[in-house]
Length: 516
Image 1 (tube, one colour):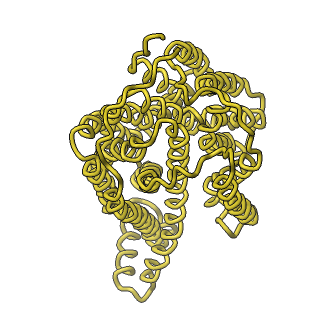
Image 2 (spheres, one colour):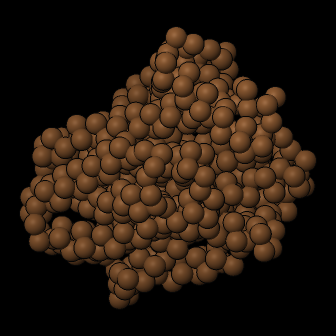
Image 3 (spheres, one colour):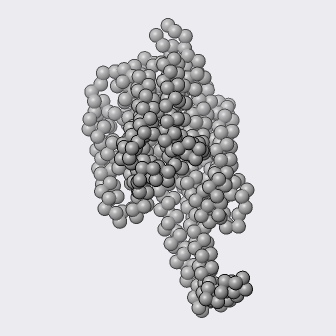
């Protein structure tokens, strides 16, 4: 028997490829215009390089537990890293947009399993009393990736070229493979097994997850169900999902073991995490748009608004990891959820006169809240499960977490558009020749424009134009406020569910058994 590997080296080994995958999910966004110009692609074509990656990623995540048992978890982890590294190399060498999309699909298929595998290995390698610390490590990587991704991608694209946002993965991938060979070992229950392949389950899973991801990514741009394309995808996803549930629940060798959802704490925790991620992604996508479009912030200043939230989250997570082992995690999780909800409520109070720190503060509060939510909620959801169920459970948990983020972005974009139209229509009702305030304001603005040398041909109608421009800004502001408020209310309703989750002393089980 060999000595068990150091748990901290295991943590480093599994988090490095996970961070690489998370960074790659956002790094392309900032280089999209460069990619489009280099490969002579349209806007719609170039966005497929993002959508295809996310869809492929979402399909593989729930398969992680089954593939780990089929191939052997360590072997599957190495194969995933190698495929991700090779596909990154070919993405950088792409000769047209079609080849880039193809290799991005391979990237997504390879990278989807790395998050759930990392989470399960961390939970197995640390004793139960230190699961909070293990999840703080994992959560730090999950939160750090979206922060560093756009910054790193922008710097590499500006100083080298967009090709290098993919080439940089090659040396990192080689290091990841070497570390995995040295420090990661399979426990007896994760060794390679002979299993009958559930082809119907694989096919229905790919169809419902892939179609759903496509709906969420493209729905708002195509006006949702007014588009035949979206309707077709919705029918495919709905039918495939129904068949998937039946096949996997009653199948002898399901690709995804749905019986873990019978565990009340796991089911509740997974549902709560869905709404947490919906709030996080919905708000984090809209906030930069708000400050840039309505307040004139540069891209750099918009990044400065977001960055402190990530930093406060990284600081809060280790604190939450320590507190989880010393007090009831339910109290910490409920506090974190309330803080996140309060942060989006503060965002719903934004005005066009808000200063930089008034906008920065809610992001700091959200960062602390996410740190105090992610660690105890994940611990309550997964920590009490048997270790042989851990990889399957983390696969489902991460799939729902990712879909929650996609739902958040889609719902936020839809509410924003619809409410902007509503507020614009309501406010326009007051811009009539019969409204004394409107007439006097229009005359005053026209007089100011004339004094400033705009010319009588412009200043005559310029007053109405300036007022209408302000109306558009105000209606847009109110629509942002509505979205933030809706996200806040939806999340605060999840707090009572946290107290229904199981919490108890499960003993201090040893870490993963030494390899033979």
